[in-house]
Image: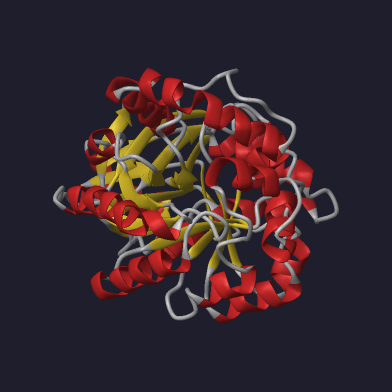
Length: 406
């Protein structure tokens, strides 16, 4: 059992000053420091001035197989970026072996990420994800819009999915990703969704990331048209946006990006109890614009914040992602947005991924960060943690210290 006494605990839109936490695998108690000293005496660990306890951060959407990218891919627009991915895909994949992916996972851990959703296109990241100390929702990705290749594509997807299901440990959850409405045939989607329902697997998909996707799905035109005609000999989209969403109507799903949605599509997301994953840095680097949080709030749709992968980001750091979002959505009240962002990478992300973490509260898994700041802690701590330097001194996952000295 651990008893940590801190200067503050940040969670649930609240700062608890001079409070501590008692935990083993799960959290047992949160109380004022003086009460814990009286009850536990020398068992208490005094963290001291500037110490802040935070729930472990949760990154719901990351692609690890492209972690070798630094400056290879083209930023500024979605289609130039996609063309550069197609041209450099094999080299980037070959340049990132298990050691590369493991180092990326360890960097995320050092930045306080105690759980993540890994979208795996090829299965090359399976061993590092299985061996990671973090909780991992391992999304095996299904892609393929050519009906003539449907059986082969689904067979490859099944091989990867079954391989992940053959790896069992606490905190590792084989799951399913549907790439996007423009890249997966509806028959394949129906089969994968049916499998997810039958086996109670988590689901995610990309949706409405770029203006090119909007034009292709609505009009069978735009920048995607020559891409699909030249690469895949397709002249019309595999799905409409609304038909695609209807395929998920009775299974809550995490939809990533959702930048270029219409009102009726947001209504379907609300009706399906779905979650939106907001990736602000990726959206900016690929020239896709910014998600409209006001429309999402008006529909009361849950949204969470993720990093995407190093193919469209310069770091997998949720502190950085939240900071960028804080400036991107400049019309929102600053402190309110800061708390919304904190919830988006803790409690809301845990709920969306069906994980028992994201809160420092009794009966939740003890996924806890010990952070240190060098400034006075006040009521705007949620903002300052994003703007000012902070040190993650220790990381606990299910009560086990996986980083640090405490």
